[in-house]
Image (cartoon, rainbow, N blue to C red):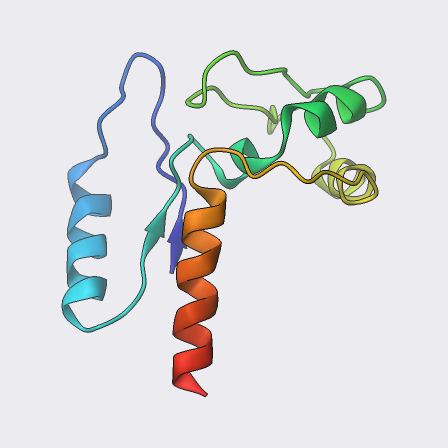
Length: 111
């Protein structure tokens, strides 16, 4: 399970519901990934965000991992995604590499 942390610069702690869900999923042997940044989009490398921001309205270059990148009222998420996936990057922001490694390990073990 992947859950956006929804943390904000002025509210850095995880809310009780997300903490409880993570605990319950893990208690049953499941995998629960709560994003280190505010949302899954915070895992995009900065160079990708900067490149797409010049072409897509509603994209913010974040200064903090808890800032919102995509303004849901202004951005066309499909347009943003199409442009973002076309940009190659070898960067693994935040805990992305660690969490992807854990996810792949669990998928392989389940086969």
